[in-house]
Image (cartoon, rainbow, N blue to C red; front, side, top):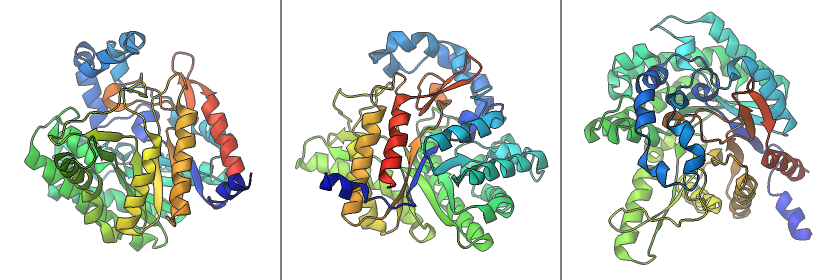
Length: 423
């Protein structure tokens, strides 16, 4: 009992217990480069689903969704744009005191230099409703979606286009900066650049290593510029990025080739971007989903169990060594900005969250400053190229039944755990 009480004191009373969303994945009726791509590719994606999905144990359960073109169109989303107050009430009922969300660039600047006041006012109301409920807003400037006029110019593949992101940042911060304590500039630059410009599976579906590298460097510059703009408008705001960081391990410990592959993967996937913004971040934002084991030839060989609905191997305790490595490198506060799993039957989510909390406790006990945890996601949402079938939400959304919201049992447990840890 004494050990339990000491454990509960690991987390400060102002620890950020929250959840995350992204505008395009929940709002509905967005018009950006992703929504255009969805409509153009839905039929192809349904006819040619990812071959890995057919090997999943739940293939027979998801087959009818995966092979339906409607699965790949975000459309009405989960109507969060209109039902955000209801969703915030649910978040409050779950004892969340923070909420990470995105500003949809294409809504507030549908044409270059043309600002939509109606949409600007919408996000004012959005942020105010969070604050009124005692939920701290954590704003994410860019979560992969862009106005079509920006991508028509080449998007982040051209350094000359960064000036448009600068103007967007300046506008957003001039409107909302006085209401915010935390801002994330860019979400997962490593993932976006890889899937869009190296693997070529996401828009604009380019396979070019040189352009991939250029995009990564341009996203470094975009962040640095945004950092300066934000600080100029409100120097008190804490600024960071949300990078995807994997717990990358050698399949055969002490094997020289496996260890070498592991070190290279860790640096280039986990730390390369952070290192280039080292002096332009006030906290280290970590998105954690994966523990991956590699052979020396960069072949991934993970255990076959346990896996989530997407077939991703689950090792939630892998967050602990990641937090320690990030702290050792940067000695800056850490916020877990995303962390979760696709689990439609809610079989593993409680276990995942519980193990994640233990991992954070261990890190805090060793002197690491962990300031917050944002579970992905508050709501079931549109999961990019996978479409609608993966369900990450603490709250289930029945899109066939008037978008009915149902709090999952794991979310109730999470809520009770937060209450316990705050004592």
